[in-house]
Image: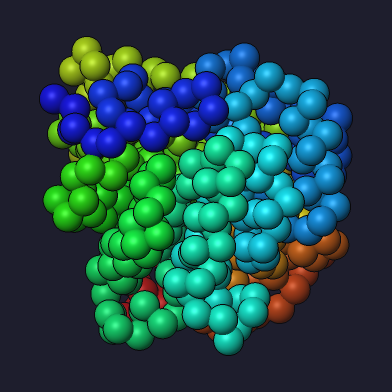
Length: 375
Ligand code: SF4
């Protein structure tokens, strides 16, 4: 039984209000590579993506996105990174603006957050755009985290609720919300809590950094199946670490999940999540080296021997989100242009050339397993 949320129009599609669940995806190409980005946006559209998101982080990205919009039929959404003011120039070319409440404090540090939210609402209203308030557990605003010590999940839900209230106060109601984490159980809990508080707001479901298939698909299903079966979730995105030419898989997998849930076909994987857990981002325009996907695949291959050990390894594509998003992992790697950074919990172990990081990772993993065995 679907929830009776408000309907939010995003260009040609409607999210919520009883409309069929919309499958979304995101380009992982460099936004400034107009040809590759337009080609990927079109491929995602042809695979059935109702909305295709593209990241912008500079004026050059905005100019590129304007060109991309002319070359694809995809229904475009922009992913604002830290520079929220780019919304003003990019809005004429897209149908939805996604902002992360956890990134708003980076620019114009003295300006109050509600003023920044008002700016975004005004821009969206002026250009016939919807908004997504996209909260990630790994990047909740420091001010909100401080009010919820030791409770990241509570902080994430609070952050989403606060931003809904700010948008409502400005009379802007054409928004959806997402609450993402890399752990399926947290995604389920956060979305249930939010849905209980704001049953009127459509939810965009996602398990962030789900990783390489098939595990990335299983993680995603574990969250989506539960929520969709409860009628929670008006749009979905499956985040998979796959090479650019396989990106449309995010859409085909999403469609399959929706079809399976509609026919009550659920997966049963009782042993899943009890051993080695590899988290990896789906990559995006920010990825610093095209070798990222191959690196994630090699990490998986190299660590197969440790699959029964409860260790989490996170592999991220860039320096911007890499350090924060690897914080909860036992071992974390994130890409730079020519080197890969490695850390063990919060201790940074150094930067290593792409060809040398794997033996060092194995050394650390062996050490960790030996320590646990001894302890
Ligand atoms: S970690 Fe960096 S490269 Fe990966 S999806 Fe996030 S922003 Fe993009």
